[in-house]
Image (spheres, rainbow, N blue to C red):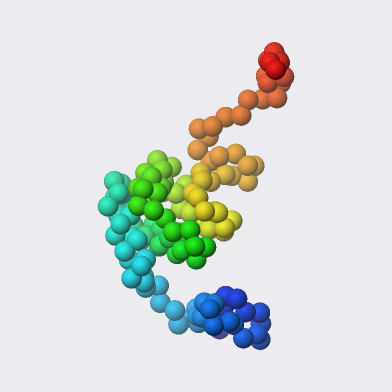
Length: 139
């Protein structure tokens, strides 16, 4: 049986202020009131129907829960701009961006990178060193 505990080592008693242990086998993927409100707020700004899926809803709620956990709540303006940016990147990159940001403990959403460190959409290019070296030096 798997369980998730925050703030306590194996066998140690968790401090009262930490999150309670959750039995993952019994936990049901229900949204809390705050997460439901966050989704209703975000869905106002969603223009693409594919972003109204349960998969994106779960990822977005995870993102909001992450931001609350690190005490960096998302503002209304940030929600609007983040949804707009995620829609530009497409569903695959949007989900990867949310996962990457949560995994890394970041406070922002960034376009995901492939294993080579290049952005997946390829819209940014880096000038080769040879070309850069040919440019005249300006102080």
